[in-house]
Amino acid sequence: QVQLVESGGGLVQPGGSLRLSCVASGFSLSSGVVNWYRQAPGKERELVASITSAGGTINYTDSVKGRFTISRDNGENAVYLQMNSLKSEDTAVYYCNARPPTNWGILNYWGQGTQVTVSS
Image 1 (tube, rainbow, N blue to C red):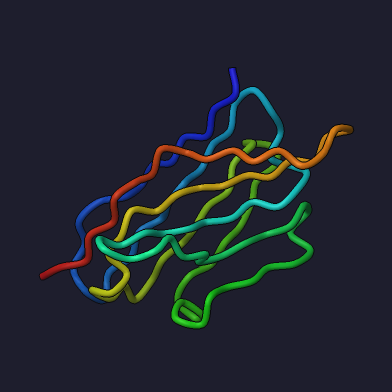
Image 2 (image 1 turned 135 degrees about the vertical axis):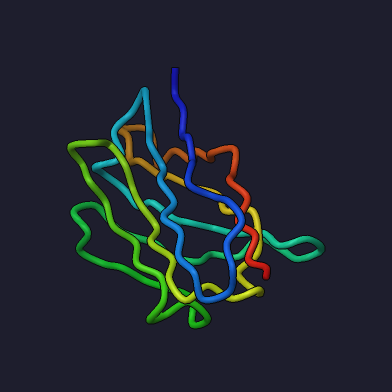
């Protein structure tokens, strides 16, 4: 069974840190792009960070550059998002998205999301 499971969300004060995890089962995260998206109430889903296979290319949206770090551990079949210096505007549901390539095209898997709330 194919699954992407996010964890690590929660309530944190401004300036705090959280580490989100995205663990895959039923397929390998080691190939293809893995993205972290977020969606705040009343807003469109936003691409936050992405990482290619082997971590060769990493991209961040401007608002998180210097504060968030995406990384992958192929041995654990996982991708992580380290979030530091959190701000209230980082409050959102964070989703992991994996796009593994196959002989038939690129698949598109989503996790269920994990809530991040930044508030004092």
